[in-house]
Image 1 (cartoon, rainbow, N blue to C red):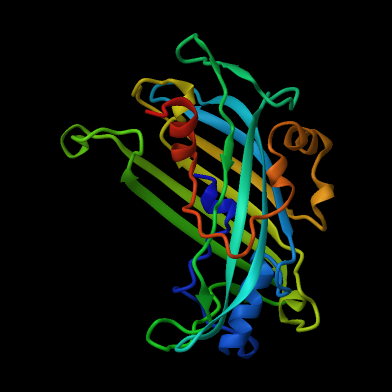
Image 2 (image 1 turned 60 degrees about the vertical axis):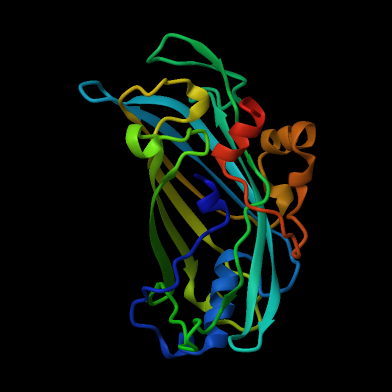
Length: 285
């Protein structure tokens, strides 16, 4: 789910016409690193975003279910390949907290308006959410084109990621009875063009918007009921980790201390998702 956002997965294959300043493999790598982390190896970067989540059921008005606040701490490192040249790898870990839509307090339990039940809340804690190495040329040696739109002093990226895969909580007969995770992640990233093109700056002032529509979250205990949940959020890359809201920092200190920094850049663990995390916490067998 949100792992696609807080790893900032940027589809780099479908690009619009690029400025001459973005046509080289070196420029591609530099600009993509600035959108995602930093051109300086092992320099931590932190994204923060917040918004609301709504439920939709046919024949009913949409319900504001809860607020959301999220963070992702990450770093990039230079990698080299004999055929593809110099690129980079990104490592990260992410949190998404569900909050009271009125008070903003982080929820421990939630009153489900559809079932009338009060259920425990399981927040997202995905560690790691890493990306494979990215280079300025593709596997065939063709230069990559920056996949964004440069419009004067503003540059943006728009990425839509349809998701449809076997639910990690499903059994052996899902081909016949269903049980697939179905969602769409939608990202928009914005930055000042001059920051992206300035070779003396290692980072850009990046803003981000994230939307998602998906099946119900597993901890909501909806038992296959008809309907869906959708999220609408916005945020930015912070100047430093300590710029996170106090409530988020306090929650991290109390329950998620590893999230004060990114994983090591040689992290080789498999990625975590909200579904695999839920399975570990709620349904270990």
